[in-house]
Amino acid sequence: MLLPLSAVPVLQPATLSDITRDAVSELMRDGESQNTLVSYRTALRYWAAWYGLRYGGGIQLPLPVTCVLQFVVDHAQRMTPQGLAFELPKEVDQALVAGGYKGKLGPMAHNTLVHRISVMSKAHQLRQLANPCQDAQVRELLSRTRKAYAKRGALPRKKAALTKDPFQALLETCDDTLRGKRDRALLLFAWASGGRRRSEVAAADMQALRRIGEAEYLYTLVHSKANQSGTDRPENHKPVLGAAGQALKNWLDASGIIDGLIFRRILKGGHLGGAMSPAAVRTIVQTRSALAGVDGDFSAHSLRSGFVTEAGRQNVSLADTMALTGHQSIPAVMGYFRAEAAILNKGARLLDDDA
Image 1 (tube, helix red, strand yellow):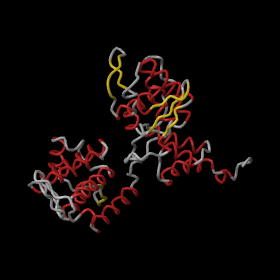
Image 2 (image 1 turned 180 degrees about the horizontal axis):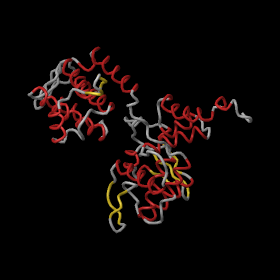
Image 3 (image 1 turned 30 degrees about the horizontal axis):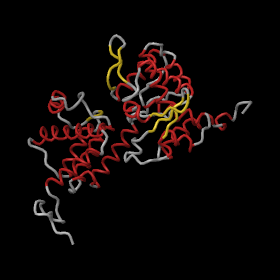
């Protein structure tokens, strides 16, 4: 049996040292995506500010159930005889906006409220504290709140899908300037490789790109929302072929990029800049949509939903579609397929002569 080294402190198996506890926290943070960490910090900052203004002191965990219930009624609209109302005092609302904790006056969007609650729930869970967000009263209140928003038609609607025809209209706005070549390559890379998320596009790196033909590539998506552990899977390899491959080759030739990030900012004067933010992908989609004059409320996610919707329209198999998108949930993909199936359903045209 090996004996402990005299220069190394002996640990207690039933407890964690401060150093180990810090290391665990750092590993937990390191394993989260940057977007997730930012959203967590934003939510917790808001909770602390709201708590301080409402209760006159620093926030401490665990929170009582009554505090979480108050948070919900402060931020969720409800119907009263006088119309829609919520309980956040006007002065508190103004202070939160003035302090930069809240974007605008008024009730929260339903999705934001749910996210705030789930972040606080996670905070209790990680500290192994009694979790007020999982209390039956809180869960029932959130369930009823969602139903109330749905009855009023107040829940957010999905962004429009960029299917083949409107997507091609966006591509036609991309000229032969460096910016035009980048935008065309970026849009086609994102759409044709299976509808890449904006964070995946912004982080796309040359070391994961392999050229397999004159203008044909395989891109290895090592890390994604559906594969955060970086597990080696056959579906990690995304083809960039045809028009997408040619556009990518033209961009790489024009930009001179041979390593590092594939897509970069374009500076004034048409010079190549540094890394793009994920939000820049959304801006490109919206700018090109406006230039093309296509109708619809488009965002970066429109590339992903558009690819899946078009695949369903063209009868691409569910398995092949999911291999490209990386979806792990069949119901998530079927939602897009069924949207097209409803339009193509022959039962909707029973009175037509050629039905």
